[in-house]
Length: 167
Image (cartoon, rainbow, N blue to C red; front, side, top):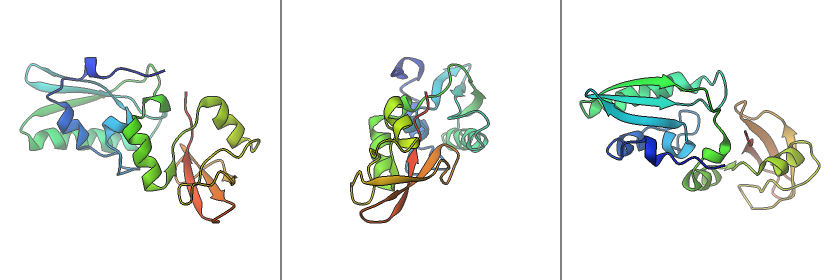
């Protein structure tokens, strides 16, 4: 499932939103993460709606503040609100976002069935972000944040995070 955000985002606001980074993964913009659901100018105020990557995500407060600050630098007032439905899915991470994750050292989410197999230890399919091997093993269901799992490569022995598939 892929969401088309362009219809709900004023193209003039896109460049400002692209400057706002995910505070937990600074190489990704909030646009690459797919958390921006709506962005329009209404009565001279930028109205922005964002969806958390998971319920209770602590980064959302920081993201909201960063959005307001980015717009303030352009002398535009912004209001940010949360949208909880439909729930965010890793399908909304852009191709550029997936590439940036890998380059940063976090394995991008697999498809839902493959994710379950990998997290249950049934298949070795999570590619090492260091050497590219799929000879990897799950070390912990939870990595540096709740949305990531910790893996280790059995070839180069390096640990790395894997961004879990969320549907």
